[in-house]
Length: 410
Ligand SMILES: Cc1ncc(COP(=O)(O)O)c(C=O)c1O
Image (cartoon, rainbow, N blue to C red; front, side, top):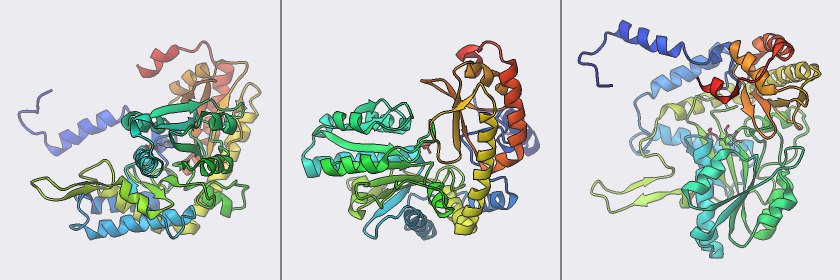
């Protein structure tokens, strides 16, 4: 498609944009259960919009030109670190999302293993449960490390013994999820991080979804096993502000127990005609909006705001969970700790149920091995929980054959 000969006028232009947008999932009507984490609150949305607008054009590549961004970024890292008990000696940076935080953690641990234990990068491996986010396999691929995914147990948690057997002298990183994306269950982080500590290997506690959930659940009195820097074996944590921190996309934090390890993230290049070039993550030019939005929403909500949202969110999760459990054909997979539920069935094809839910505009994700349907619940869903459960009961009662994978992508 070539550039149009003549530019469109603004009205015609936005008519076209809106026409295209009409095809998208209706997240603002509670129809999506991943990708977006809406609070459903106009005041929060306005804060996010104003922060993004204020920093629409700035570039976070050069902190000397835009010190406000550098300071906000440093404070986001500090506030996030405080939530997950990062020690004084720790440090970190922002990244564009969970995947980039994880990539940086794997890179740092590859470098550490080489420097501290003489592990040749070409021979290195990472050991993770199959429930780990795909970003770990991707990082291994990019960094040319061997990926060793280890089957999980029947309760969908990591198998510590099997992981221990997979570790060898060339293992540069072990990880566990607190909690994991596929089923919302906590891996045994204490046992896994102790294993890593005993073997002198880095341990990444992946709290991309959990970092802005678990600290608040703990404060609200829920029983939350240790998962953060209070465990001496945890060396890295990934914390996404753009999930349950409610920032707009492009805001994650990668934390290291030892601030010196942040240097291993840095790429510095001195022999460029344009002068010294250095970046802490993959991106060169970086959008400033996500930094401003993350800083603003964290300061706007504060601890009391996050706790209030979490209280309501757990009540909505409990309601949806009870509604699913009341459908005799369905069962919740494992023991999810937060606002993430996956359900399956021994007697019906959940993908066929999902096809009918698709027809009614609901966007559930399809899990595999075994088949199941996946939901990340957000505060906005409070308004839509009854409608969702009623449609789910209808879909379970009326489903036919699953239409197969093609039907989903057409
Ligand atoms: C546990 C976990 N880790 C990592 C990621 C990757 O985050 P992102 O999609 O922001 O790259 C996710 C995303 O849902 C996740 O749930």
